[in-house]
Amino acid sequence: MPVSSDWSVSQLSPLIDWLSDIITEPDDILNIAERAGCRKGKMSKLNTADAQWQEVIRYAINEGYFEKLMPEIQAKVPGKSDTLEQCLKKVGTRRLVELLGTDYAKLKEAIDKLFGEEEPKRQVEAATDIRKIVVKFWKELNYDISWQAMTPIETSMEEINKRRQVLVVLCVNIIGAADYMLALTKRMGTSGVPSDPEDARTYLAAYERIRNSSSGSDDELRRTIDARMTLVMEASRLWFTLKETITLAPDSSV
Image (tube, rainbow, N blue to C red; front, side):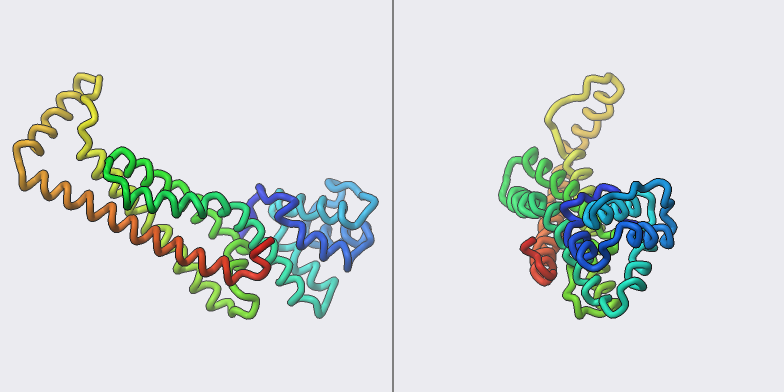
């Protein structure tokens, strides 16, 4: 799986700092990059290992060579695979902390708002916020470093995949629950008549059918409440799962 091109130098610094200490010659760094498929002529030779590694890693990420770069680094430093893995986990953890830092708090706020608010408009705002946050996190699960960062170093690949699958399923369930709730709320809403004449006729006819059928209205209301509670429960499960997995990640305080 590729690494997103929006990774920052600060997120990559644990890896860059470690590499700068063990492979210090800019020519050696460029040769490693070239063997990974990076075009040497596209990268400048710089004076320090730190600057050279920044250039190489950023180029590898932007051009899609990052996955090929890691085995070349491992071959250059035999016996240090565990240390490299620890660095990659720190990189992934740092990215997750930065990405989820504000969103993690916002997710809890949105869940509390969705559960506690009585005003439908405020509930819709909360459901929309939850959906946006979860879609962002779901996309991040496509990047190997990010989701592997959320597991202890000794965790097997099988266990890593299981943990990732749990998170993916939770995200999909939440997005689906949010869409269902928002669709039901839109049907139940009576905030105003559409300005378009054709839309207005359809709206008023539908509203009259609901208003004149107490059983239909009750069923619709029950479905909306059930959808909201389902979204609250699934989003809460994700929040607690993230709380556990990020705590398990190495160096999660970075």
